Length: 281
Ligand SMILES: CC(C)(COP(=O)(O)OP(=O)(O)OC[C@H]1O[C@@H](n2cnc3c(N)ncnc32)[C@H](O[C@H]2O[C@H](COP(=O)(O)OP(=O)(O)OP(=O)(O)O)[C@@H](O)[C@H]2O)[C@@H]1O)[C@@H](O)C(=O)NCCC(=O)NCCS
Ligand SMILES: Nc1ncnc2[nH]cnc12
Image (cartoon, rainbow, N blue to C red):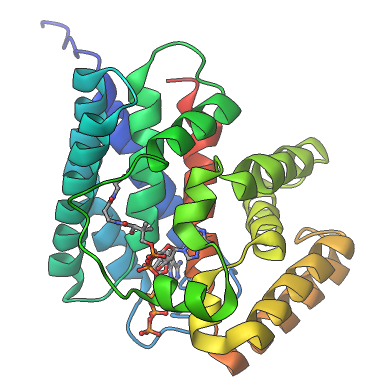
């Protein structure tokens, strides 16, 4: 009998696989305060776990094309930024077609698209901080074809002055490099299970991020409740401790009461999980 000889996957395929896996891992992680997870729909009437999975899978072609574009262009400049913008908008259309119009992963397409492109641009210096900074340089380039839109993020920026997804990327993803990854690694080193380490990383993002989804639905009161509640879990010992789990339940209940969904923090956790593994491809 002949041995089956499998060709190694090309880098764009590997990067799309890794990004989709990060999205599915984020969706499955439970219990996440206010968010869709294995327990239910969180603060969302319009989303569930199956929809999050279908949405994640629908993004594979767009993420692979973004990696291919980065390899083809080979430099951080306006032509690559323009192509990523076009592919990002096509990815959003594929997502909305899959979810019948529900915005499941808009912020994730933005963050993961930039990070996938950053990883595909160069085979050297692939540590998380270098990749996040490279993605930030891409995000700083204007996309002249981007249509002017009055998104939730834009409205929240006007009202509260919050930077949102665009600024987070342009600054090189400080919520990930300064908060989520250090917490993920600290919790693992302290012996927490992978689930608890990921929950702690999510809480570290929630404690520091101006999440425009929360500001949109629940205003400054909602954002304060999110940040203080997430900090309280971490200060009580994190999600692996009994005291931390009590605080986590209280935070979940408070976010549901406020109808606040930290979708921006969820997207950044997926980006954090991607960055955690992207260097070793
Ligand atoms: C530059 C863009 C990111 C557009 O940004 P903008 O702020 O103008 O637009 P939004 O439509 O508000 O999308 C931003 C999404 O980013 C997530 N997010 C929020 N805060 C942050 C943050 N501080 N840092 C990082 N990411 C953040 C968030 O995504 C999640 O929430 C979605 C649900 O949100 P929403 O639609 O408000 O839904 P609901 O609460 O359900 O609404 P209601 O029910 O109340 O009506 C969910 O999908 C998560 O993904 C924000 O939504 C960028 O998108 C852009 O310009 N794209 C164009 C294409 C492009 O250039 N792409 C480049 C390719 S790499
Ligand atoms: N798990 C989740 N729940 C709600 N919104 C999200 N956006 C991205 N991931 C999400």
